[in-house]
Image (cartoon, rainbow, N blue to C red; front, side, top):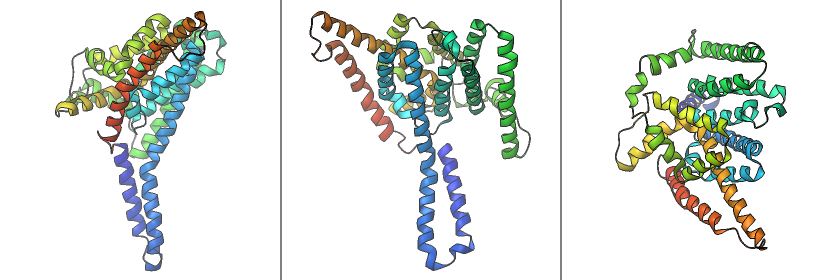
Length: 353
């Protein structure tokens, strides 16, 4: 959809430029043609370039979040998991609002005190910044509120100044962002429109989203999110169990449960592999913001395997030997199962989208 608007805007620019008197002269037609060609290419490529930059920022903050939760070694393996997961490889850099929502979610989670192991070490301004980013995420996609309701309640339970948190931080930031988005909508639509309210009316109150299809309540648990994780699934489960970081792990469960309750899960009727691909792309992008969080636990598991192998080699006095066979087997499994699917989805399936 975003690329469609980009092409439409490019067409308008070209048509306007062609109708201007400056292009009537044949002497300058070639120069103007080159300029217009460059302009069209820039307008078509700019969204992807910007999203690639945003994705890199998201990778950085995922590394930083994993670093403060699990340490440097686990953060390195988290980054490996993020870059090799087939769904992140395919969907993260696409010009979807879900992709930008994912980046904002990772940045905001890093600044929330309640997510840290030691909340007292987080600067007081950190929470205000986290609130502002979370509010921006909700302005872009109202369903992002599902994530921030969980984080906000968690913060409310552990914070000491609850009154200050609600009335002096959450309320002012929320009102400010709401007012700005309301003003932008007024300018763009030409009338006063509450876009979040229309969103709720269509998707929740009138069940308009069901027009695109529904699935069983357990779809995200048994098919959607599990296939998004793919071969990272056992490493993620092991990481959740052994790391015992229940607060951040609970966010994954919360988001999956809420989306499972909602009936609307887009479905595109097509054949064989196309069915699987379309279902995962359309449905999976809704829970994309918590996929990097799940991969963070996979990184923890890989770091634990690496540390265990290193301890064994240390006891044997063989520190110069190659990496242990368990880690080699795990990495090989992940690469063999994810890279081919990532390349197929990016270079064959919906290559122009």
